[in-house]
Length: 175
Picture 1 (spheres, rainbow, N blue to C red):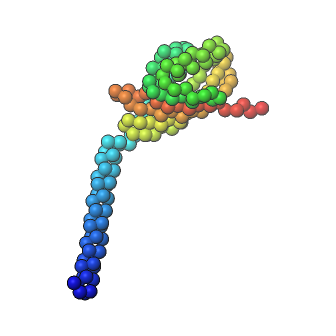
Picture 2: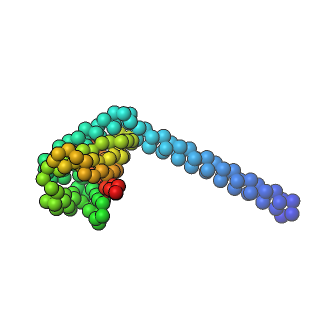
């Protein structure tokens, strides 16, 4: 084979290589775009006003159970695999452990203390919601004794919102 023929073969191989790589990349991009469209179709955004109202209904029911010291009703809001992270405590993992932690907390709470939960923001999709809220704790006379804030992640399972993660802490008292 002469040098001109070798050069033509080498050039053809290089051109074929770049053509194959270019076609392969285009197919990969198209596949990624189709996957992204599918993911968007299955995770549609929810009307934030409607979602906030739904989550506030949950928090209102939560407050009723919390103020009644009904640990069973409170535990029913949590998934079996939930994780709760409270102020100044280690992480609590699982519904049973969260329920036990709530029982211990309730036993230390003074009689007549009530808490309200106010949803500040809620956003998400049809199946997941993130909530940001604040708490107000009052004594038996209605005097505010502490405030705090929290975040919760809710997942819709079997058509029902259930808490899968939460974190909360109290505000520092101003002196």
